[in-house]
Image (cartoon, rainbow, N blue to C red; front, top):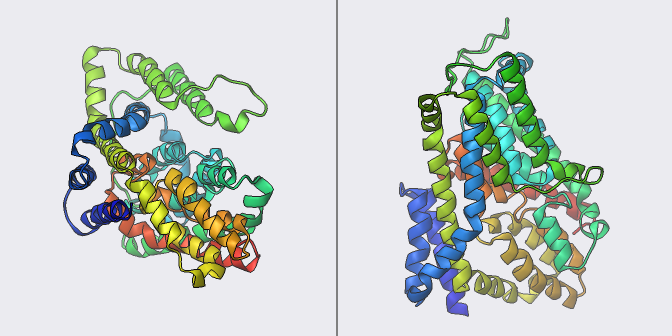
Amino acid sequence: MNMLAILGFATIGTLLLLVALTRIPVIAALVLTPVVAAVAGGFGSQLGAFAVDGLRTVAPIAALIMFAVLYFGLMIDVGLFTPLIRRLVGFVRGDPIKLCLATAALAMLVALDGDGATTFLISITALLPVHRRIGVNPLILPAIVALSAGVMNLLPWGGPTARAMSVLRADVDQIFVPVLPAMIVGILWVFFVAWRLGIAERRRLASQWNELSGTQPIIAVTSEAAAPARGALFAFNAALTVLVIFFLLQGLFARWISLPELPASLLFMTAFAIALPINRRTATAQREQMSAHAANAVLVVSLILAAGVFTGILNGTGMIKAMATLLASNTPPALSPWLSQIVAITSMPLSLVFTPDAYYFGVLPVLADAAAAVGNDPLAIGRAAILGQMTTGFPLSPLTASTFILLGLSGVSLRDHQKFVFRWAFGTTVVMTIVASATGAI
């Protein structure tokens, strides 16, 4: 078991080093690292089955992303978001500070549904043209959206908090409510970070910034297609998009409206199948429309499939389970009184190592039992865990498919994204940990 755990840590460490320190493509690192590790561990004969199992788990996400990119690409090309972009540009008046604050606010509102993929799809699609128009650093949009989605992922209907409550047999009042003050401070921290990034961008763009008139620099916007929709066609596209977003966010309205739950992948497939022939009438126009966004779709889908191979092999070989057991069972007794603070501080970085299921169902129960054995509150361990593990950490983790949605739509690399946003995401966890400790939540 220990050797398997060591192999697992070595595999993930190698992946992170390859991504951070070399120019090896992320897709190559995601595929080759676990394959080599599995063969070295004696799992060569089962390698194919493990990889296929992993691919099955991410296939719906891959389909979702492909058709979401094609659908939103079409809507951008026909000018559906042009009025929104003009209003946003008018509001921010070329000021990167206002843009960064507006980005955080919009992402947090969308993240109320608790789904990271939806948050990234809507936020990036709506705001990317505005960020490009003003000329903001391309890494800032995914960074702010990631930070916003991360802190909002503490909500009770988010995956990490729900898992923690399930494992510890606790309810919302026991897990989420005590950390609510910390979450509020975390939200304020994200706005502070957005403000800081906006200040830095204002300085960088000082040569283009006009303090007197407040006009924005003229930056070319990519993906400006011919034949924009007008009149009835514009109204149809708007109604179809609102309907798509409504079904994506239907969890927010489930209390009042009972609707059939449509998989997001099928939703975007259907929407694109309707919108394409209506907006592009000829076969040539349809082919050109799909070709215009095929490169982005293929890039992100290939990364998601590669991530599926990575997690499938690590789960199938038992490396994830072995790592969880080794980590939880080797906590020094002298650290037990500070266990909740240690769990909180390490929770965000461990999102790069453990999937949410492995951490919450494997590591958390053992840590909670260890805390109870020395007289600590095991529920405090659960509250500490959600301060970072797959909350602030999930938009940076190569183990979550939604990370590649964020990156694919933004057009930035995992390596650059992690380098840029890690300290801010870790800072969110540290700030919330301090508040949670001060309020007695952990």
